[in-house]
Image (tube, rainbow, N blue to C red; front, side, top):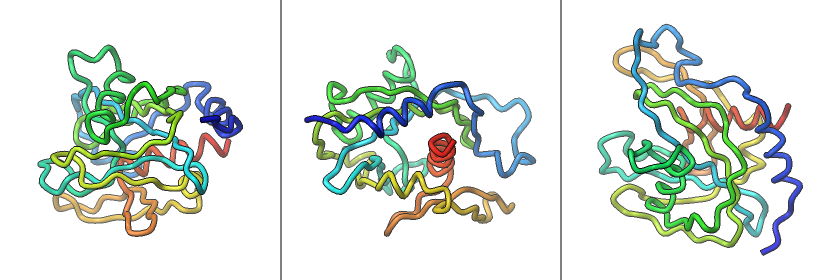
Length: 200
């Protein structure tokens, strides 16, 4: 399948340079614990060419999961001892969660790490899926996989800072809703970072 290269080239260019890292504590620095120990993790930000244009693959986590049930997330997870690196972890997790064959994926680069309130340092791996792909979810982990138009996620005006009470205190976070999906927290923050890079 021939893929238009202009968007891919734009993404590659946007990933050049280190750029600032991001964090769940960006909007709430006062809540960052001292001596926070972080475990390595990785997520796959997969660009897919859809009939109506470019889109990014997201998942809705299973409601039965202990951590973040029902939340919107990228395919991904912690880096296991058997993973060569963060890229390998992201590709492995995407294969396990939504059936994405690593052979279909071309990695474009990565964004700076993102620190989560749950104690992970997450490396976002940017990639393009080089063939038509229909997700097949692993029901124990993923309730649904879906595609969000890239044009929406790159529109900085689509993002809002909202807040809610968590562990008895008011916390602020980024959100970028789309249709019935409420994309917020770390996922929205990483997407907001990509939008800022693409706009720069």
